[in-house]
Image (cartoon, rainbow, N blue to C red; front, side, top):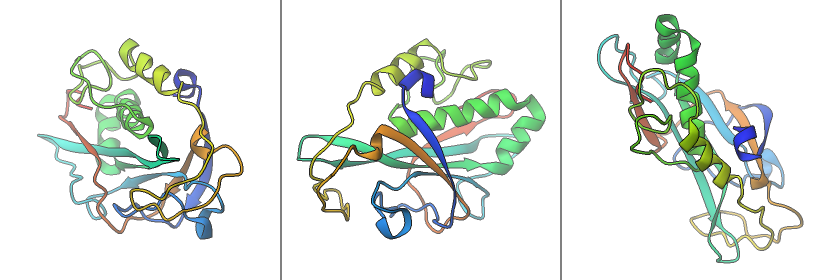
Length: 205
């Protein structure tokens, strides 16, 4: 991801914040005067009811998405995001097929976090029902990531649009230039993201 986009990802460590559809991308009391890091959580069906671990049939393996704000009313900029991973189903996938397929699921969801959508080409990792053996980014995926990485870091007033709580004047580059991740230890709400399915024995990302 870093090589493809040019973005720098920093592991911010653990947090007590739970993933939530009401997640705020600016929380100075918790994270200081910067954008909240992207949250990554390994969850079970108790925490995310859409996550199942059926031995036969489809399982939702992950949910991922970005959060954007408008700066100076000149378009939206990605500043944070959330990534939920179906821990038990991914563990079972690794037991059946090894780690490569599970890594593909994680890379697929991270693609959503930085801004990639699904594509119809079955030879690409960002296809929602991927072809067997496609377990990492392919040429089309890499081209999309490279384009996303060309986005400029933005300075200026943060408008507070889309319910964003922050109305301050920026004194430096927005942290959207840097991909920050923080592991979430629990979940309290349903996050509306992009769902992907997996059928045992055939990679569906």
